Image (cartoon, rainbow, N blue to C red; front, side, top):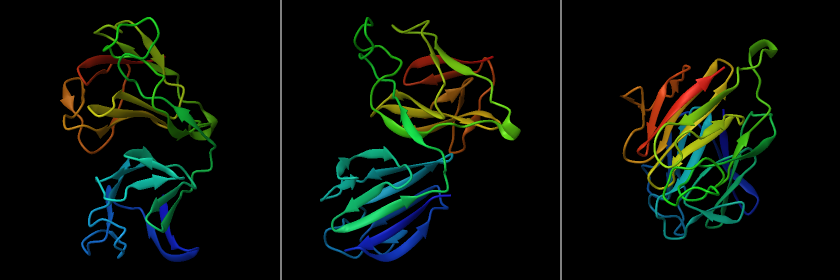
Length: 227
């Protein structure tokens, strides 16, 4: 379970345990985390839990949201990240003990040898995610992959070697496939339209994937294949 430690000039002001699906941050008193400072917008940012992951999204604030000194729009938080809003520093801490590595977002027009505008396997847009994840009782989760069924990238297969693999078209529709002790789960991350699994829209709760399941995301169909 993650928590936020809010500090100003090195002095800790408050600690907040992240227990809700969405946690709002801003100057207005109705926010979950209220920072009463003019450098903070009324509705500055929102933190969203997707499975075991926490994303932070800037809500078009006046002064912006920064992570480790870099301006962001939306980003996955990892252990020990420092969110900066005005003069305030908010450290994200989690019980996660694994090391972190990078996974990639599928994005059109980036894979070598494929036509621009197609739905491509990684790499693009790194997101930090944990690695070294095993199954219960030391039993590894069976290997799995996703196979693109339509479009310019039809037939391409991407192995799910990371704990979290993020797929989709950034700014349009993005989802995540997370490797857990009980198998793989699929969750909606961003986009007005919900992705589907076997024709059923994915809601707020992650969906457990089974071998042969067909995912439709941003106009692309993919099949989940597990050995």
